Image (cartoon, rainbow, N blue to C red; front, side):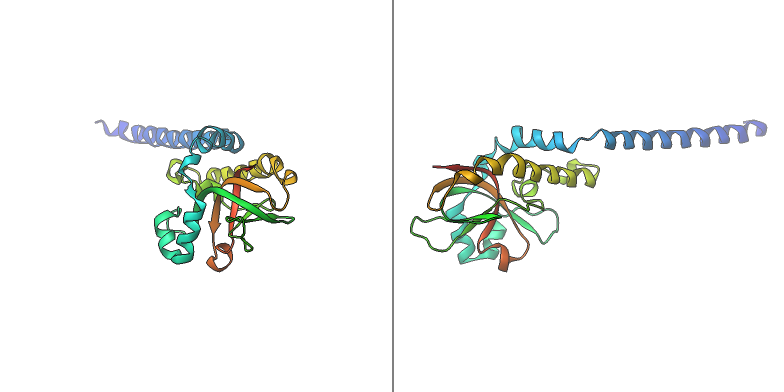
Length: 205
Protein backbone atom coordinates (compact mmCIF):
# COMPACT_ATOMS: atom_id res chain seq x y z
CA UNK A 1 0.00 0.00 0.00
CA UNK A 2 1.15 3.49 -0.81
CA UNK A 3 2.70 4.99 2.33
CA UNK A 4 0.78 8.19 1.68
CA UNK A 5 -2.48 6.24 2.08
CA UNK A 6 -1.57 4.36 5.26
CA UNK A 7 -2.05 7.24 7.68
CA UNK A 8 -5.45 8.38 6.33
CA UNK A 9 -6.71 4.78 6.34
CA UNK A 10 -5.59 4.26 9.93
CA UNK A 11 -7.28 7.48 10.99
CA UNK A 12 -10.46 6.42 9.23
CA UNK A 13 -10.43 3.01 10.92
CA UNK A 14 -9.87 4.51 14.35
CA UNK A 15 -12.66 7.02 13.76
CA UNK A 16 -15.10 4.30 12.66
CA UNK A 17 -14.15 2.16 15.65
CA UNK A 18 -14.87 5.02 18.02
CA UNK A 19 -18.21 5.66 16.38
CA UNK A 20 -19.19 2.00 16.65
CA UNK A 21 -18.31 1.91 20.35
CA UNK A 22 -20.25 5.07 20.98
CA UNK A 23 -23.25 3.71 19.08
CA UNK A 24 -23.20 0.49 21.11
CA UNK A 25 -23.01 2.50 24.31
CA UNK A 26 -25.94 4.63 23.21
CA UNK A 27 -28.01 1.58 22.38
CA UNK A 28 -27.16 0.05 25.75
CA UNK A 29 -28.31 3.18 27.52
CA UNK A 30 -31.48 3.28 25.44
CA UNK A 31 -32.22 -0.31 26.39
CA UNK A 32 -31.78 0.51 30.07
CA UNK A 33 -34.09 3.50 29.73
CA UNK A 34 -36.74 1.38 28.04
CA UNK A 35 -36.86 -1.21 30.85
CA UNK A 36 -40.00 -0.74 32.93
CA UNK A 37 -39.64 -2.55 36.25
CA UNK A 38 -43.28 -2.02 37.22
CA UNK A 39 -44.55 -3.60 34.01
CA UNK A 40 -42.06 -6.45 34.30
CA UNK A 41 -43.05 -7.14 37.92
CA UNK A 42 -46.76 -7.10 37.07
CA UNK A 43 -46.24 -9.50 34.17
CA UNK A 44 -44.07 -11.77 36.32
CA UNK A 45 -46.74 -11.82 39.03
CA UNK A 46 -49.67 -12.55 36.75
CA UNK A 47 -48.20 -14.88 34.16
CA UNK A 48 -45.35 -16.64 35.98
CA UNK A 49 -45.74 -16.53 39.75
CA UNK A 50 -49.47 -17.21 39.99
CA UNK A 51 -49.12 -20.09 37.53
CA UNK A 52 -46.41 -21.78 39.59
CA UNK A 53 -47.87 -21.73 43.09
CA UNK A 54 -47.93 -25.52 43.08
CA UNK A 55 -44.14 -25.44 43.35
CA UNK A 56 -44.37 -24.00 46.85
CA UNK A 57 -43.47 -26.45 49.62
CA UNK A 58 -45.94 -27.68 52.22
CA UNK A 59 -45.55 -25.52 55.32
CA UNK A 60 -45.99 -28.32 57.88
CA UNK A 61 -43.34 -30.46 56.24
CA UNK A 62 -40.91 -27.59 56.01
CA UNK A 63 -41.42 -26.51 59.63
CA UNK A 64 -40.78 -30.08 60.81
CA UNK A 65 -37.60 -30.22 58.73
CA UNK A 66 -36.41 -26.89 60.11
CA UNK A 67 -37.09 -27.93 63.70
CA UNK A 68 -35.26 -31.22 63.22
CA UNK A 69 -32.30 -29.99 61.18
CA UNK A 70 -32.31 -26.41 59.82
CA UNK A 71 -29.07 -26.91 57.88
CA UNK A 72 -30.50 -29.92 56.06
CA UNK A 73 -33.77 -28.09 55.43
CA UNK A 74 -31.85 -25.25 53.86
CA UNK A 75 -29.83 -27.58 51.66
CA UNK A 76 -32.90 -29.50 50.46
CA UNK A 77 -35.52 -26.80 50.05
CA UNK A 78 -34.10 -23.27 50.08
CA UNK A 79 -33.34 -21.02 47.13
CA UNK A 80 -30.13 -19.01 47.26
CA UNK A 81 -28.96 -16.29 44.90
CA UNK A 82 -25.35 -16.94 43.96
CA UNK A 83 -23.04 -17.14 46.96
CA UNK A 84 -25.22 -15.00 49.19
CA UNK A 85 -25.63 -15.92 52.84
CA UNK A 86 -29.35 -15.13 52.50
CA UNK A 87 -31.70 -17.92 51.55
CA UNK A 88 -35.40 -18.23 50.82
CA UNK A 89 -38.33 -20.62 51.11
CA UNK A 90 -41.41 -20.81 48.85
CA UNK A 91 -44.24 -22.07 51.08
CA UNK A 92 -47.95 -22.87 51.04
CA UNK A 93 -50.32 -24.31 53.60
CA UNK A 94 -53.12 -23.57 56.04
CA UNK A 95 -53.17 -22.33 59.60
CA UNK A 96 -55.03 -20.58 62.39
CA UNK A 97 -54.66 -16.93 63.37
CA UNK A 98 -53.24 -16.51 66.86
CA UNK A 99 -52.95 -12.72 66.76
CA UNK A 100 -53.26 -9.78 64.40
CA UNK A 101 -50.64 -7.10 64.93
CA UNK A 102 -49.81 -3.87 63.19
CA UNK A 103 -47.19 -5.36 60.90
CA UNK A 104 -47.91 -9.09 60.89
CA UNK A 105 -50.43 -11.86 61.45
CA UNK A 106 -49.12 -14.70 63.62
CA UNK A 107 -50.16 -18.19 62.53
CA UNK A 108 -50.20 -21.63 64.10
CA UNK A 109 -50.35 -24.59 61.77
CA UNK A 110 -52.34 -26.56 64.34
CA UNK A 111 -55.86 -25.74 65.60
CA UNK A 112 -54.79 -26.05 69.23
CA UNK A 113 -51.38 -24.38 68.78
CA UNK A 114 -50.37 -21.60 71.13
CA UNK A 115 -47.02 -20.65 69.56
CA UNK A 116 -46.79 -19.32 66.00
CA UNK A 117 -44.74 -21.19 63.44
CA UNK A 118 -45.35 -18.51 60.81
CA UNK A 119 -45.97 -14.78 60.70
CA UNK A 120 -47.48 -13.21 57.58
CA UNK A 121 -45.99 -9.77 56.97
CA UNK A 122 -48.48 -6.99 56.28
CA UNK A 123 -46.31 -3.83 56.29
CA UNK A 124 -42.71 -2.65 56.00
CA UNK A 125 -41.96 -5.24 53.33
CA UNK A 126 -38.45 -4.97 51.93
CA UNK A 127 -35.88 -7.36 50.54
CA UNK A 128 -36.16 -9.96 47.81
CA UNK A 129 -38.30 -12.68 49.37
CA UNK A 130 -40.66 -13.22 46.45
CA UNK A 131 -38.29 -12.33 43.63
CA UNK A 132 -35.69 -14.85 44.81
CA UNK A 133 -37.79 -17.12 47.03
CA UNK A 134 -40.02 -18.46 44.29
CA UNK A 135 -36.98 -19.49 42.26
CA UNK A 136 -38.61 -18.34 39.03
CA UNK A 137 -36.25 -15.52 37.98
CA UNK A 138 -32.62 -15.87 36.99
CA UNK A 139 -30.25 -12.98 37.66
CA UNK A 140 -28.17 -14.05 34.65
CA UNK A 141 -31.06 -13.06 32.38
CA UNK A 142 -30.49 -9.41 33.28
CA UNK A 143 -27.62 -7.33 31.93
CA UNK A 144 -28.25 -4.57 34.44
CA UNK A 145 -28.32 -5.46 38.15
CA UNK A 146 -30.25 -2.28 38.89
CA UNK A 147 -33.12 -3.54 36.74
CA UNK A 148 -33.12 -6.75 38.75
CA UNK A 149 -33.25 -4.80 42.01
CA UNK A 150 -36.01 -2.55 40.71
CA UNK A 151 -38.13 -5.61 39.95
CA UNK A 152 -37.93 -6.63 43.59
CA UNK A 153 -39.05 -3.17 44.72
CA UNK A 154 -42.03 -3.30 42.39
CA UNK A 155 -42.98 -6.80 43.56
CA UNK A 156 -42.99 -5.56 47.14
CA UNK A 157 -45.30 -2.73 46.06
CA UNK A 158 -47.69 -5.28 44.58
CA UNK A 159 -47.75 -7.12 47.89
CA UNK A 160 -48.45 -3.99 49.94
CA UNK A 161 -50.86 -2.30 47.54
CA UNK A 162 -52.75 -5.24 46.02
CA UNK A 163 -52.30 -8.38 48.13
CA UNK A 164 -52.38 -7.21 51.75
CA UNK A 165 -55.59 -5.13 51.33
CA UNK A 166 -57.46 -8.25 50.16
CA UNK A 167 -57.22 -9.87 53.59
CA UNK A 168 -55.76 -7.64 56.31
CA UNK A 169 -59.01 -6.07 57.53
CA UNK A 170 -61.18 -9.11 56.82
CA UNK A 171 -59.63 -11.57 59.27
CA UNK A 172 -59.89 -12.07 63.00
CA UNK A 173 -58.17 -14.13 65.66
CA UNK A 174 -59.15 -17.80 65.38
CA UNK A 175 -59.85 -17.74 61.65
CA UNK A 176 -58.47 -20.55 59.54
CA UNK A 177 -56.66 -19.35 56.44
CA UNK A 178 -54.80 -20.74 53.47
CA UNK A 179 -51.63 -19.00 52.39
CA UNK A 180 -48.82 -19.02 49.87
CA UNK A 181 -45.73 -16.86 50.14
CA UNK A 182 -41.98 -16.61 50.44
CA UNK A 183 -39.70 -16.20 53.44
CA UNK A 184 -36.27 -14.59 53.50
CA UNK A 185 -33.82 -15.90 56.09
CA UNK A 186 -31.00 -13.59 57.06
CA UNK A 187 -30.58 -14.45 60.72
CA UNK A 188 -31.67 -17.97 61.61
CA UNK A 189 -32.17 -17.04 65.26
CA UNK A 190 -34.69 -14.33 64.35
CA UNK A 191 -36.14 -15.41 61.00
CA UNK A 192 -36.96 -19.08 61.58
CA UNK A 193 -39.02 -18.81 64.75
CA UNK A 194 -41.47 -17.79 63.52
CA UNK A 195 -40.80 -17.97 59.80
CA UNK A 196 -41.58 -14.54 58.33
CA UNK A 197 -43.71 -14.89 55.23
CA UNK A 198 -44.23 -12.28 52.50
CA UNK A 199 -47.67 -13.19 51.13
CA UNK A 200 -48.64 -13.99 47.56
CA UNK A 201 -52.14 -15.20 48.42
CA UNK A 202 -53.99 -15.31 51.73
CA UNK A 203 -57.61 -16.49 51.90
CA UNK A 204 -60.04 -17.26 54.69
CA UNK A 205 -61.22 -20.88 54.67
